[in-house]
Image (tube, rainbow, N blue to C red; front, side, top):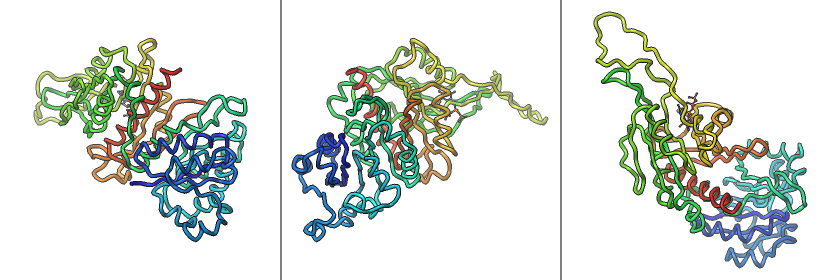
Length: 416
Ligand code: CTP
């Protein structure tokens, strides 16, 4: 079993810690809690001990604990460290490398991945010092989840509320490479939702025997279609030419060109959600010869190209027909986040899943055609954009992660 060291900071959001422990355990993870002195004002160590099924650690100078389990051992035993709520103080300490209590020493003594879910007053969050610390933590490789915007316990409104325990637990499981689990409530939020997906490459004919194509295998899109269908969604997959069989429970429609893909997607509207994973050819030959082009001994004619329709951008601007949740993918070889953000704005989608398809991705066999992927999920919200970077994981796990996020989105909109 993989283990999480959950460091609970001293903020009002600490009251959500027992629920977070439950959600982490529901993901199949073992949890050990460590709380700062201030956290004990907001949540009882006893309730944490009972939900985690383990002793709760809270004092660096407790000699019994140091003898039994020092801060080094605490971080060594964990596969990942999760700080939730991450207060301004804990973030500042971690960014500066300060170590004067059990929480900060454990953070400094570890070489494991760290995830932080910040929670604080909106002004504290927006303060230059916190933003500086945030940038430093990101540069140090810490994954930041949230904070979300909303009404806060202090009576103000804005970014600063801790993300929901379920979202934090899913991201933690995903960071560990575990397949996120979808619970019954989320399944019911997806049940019967109509989702259209695109996947694979497109083939743009030059003449009856030749075409322009790309290296997309369709594996990521097919995996997402399968995961959504398994969770109960009504899935229509529009696919370019691939070698993959139809995923169970999915309606598969095979097409060849970008224009056929667009027509097939438009025929499905309106839909609740759309996930555009296809590597659509940006250009097609301006004219497709009806006969095979012959060599004829002369130098070849340059191939005149014309731009293909952008299916994602067309859906983003579809007015009343726009899917409630529109998700794009961004295949980049450099400046991943900046390029992906620009794409998200240009194509007016809600989320974009950015993946590095360059040769430096570190993924065996490459992203295109391979079985693994490494993604950054960016959610559009100009005031409070959420950016989460995940470790390399299988395309199946990425599909489960995205399905879980989509289920959570629909569950929230149902409630709202
Ligand atoms: N996309 C689309 N139709 C197109 C081109 C792209 O629907 N004609 C979608 C893809 O399915 C993906 C997103 O747009 O969800 C981004 O695709 P990508 O190839 O990364 O971006 P491009 O728009 O082609 O930009 P560029 O090639 O300049 O990076």
